[in-house]
Length: 371
Image (cartoon, rainbow, N blue to C red):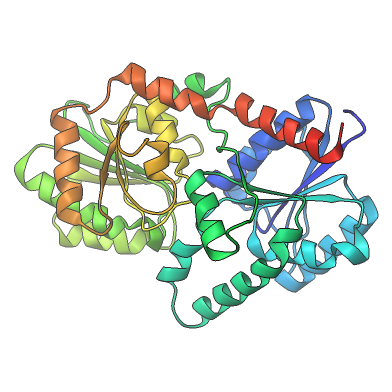
């Protein structure tokens, strides 16, 4: 398979779950002899830790329009055997121009996020943009050579909003690699002088969709009736809001914001319960990471991923979206009585291995190219 080439397209390479997933798959393809490259508009400074020497990354630093122009020129020049898209706008662009410029390239459309979740939460100009994007997708996605969703619920969401007969293949995100255990055991400086008090951890981008406000309100209820701490790992536009709300709720030293961490796994392993309280998700990588660390999980039953990852609540407590009281009750219950045995959590997490996902992508490429 050494003659094959693949190109992964990202609108921006950030220090997030999508980028880790894409790099896992790209590196796996390289290992089996497929020439694989990533193309993006910009690589964020914090994301450099995710880069690998065996996977070339081309960053066309420019405006969005300039990026599309440079991307078009690059694809026309290289014309890879397979183009893998991960952003809806770039996917539409590639499919729209394929007949003119890169006819021989096969295109895999990958859907990492819910379509309906962001649409329902949007207003004004953003909603108009998403509706236009959806209109384009209804006309273009069917022309992709393969459509891949990261969960069955995302696949169902696509069919519901795009076309009921759209063939969508589900390949779960790769999360657990060979070095996962070693990374999770990295020594960290715990923000409190002791570890005797039970700790709840949140890990992720501090964005509105992640509902830090809900978590802080729920934690405040827990804090009133039991000794407990909250550790927030991550950074983002809602950081100031979260810090201000923590002060308003008088959480004091019980709530610590440690910012972005290149390796969040030790923070998860050293906590008692991980909480994901988003309004929407495509998958929920951090849920798998928590299970693999043997940490209990509480999550909102939001579209589209947590319920599937947790098997409808079998591997973690699921609560209704936007319900601070229910979230507080679930956190308290998980701290008092662990919901799932550690061995069972790790066994479930192992199903989301890098090896398994890469093997599925290799098989997909073989089928598409009739090898």
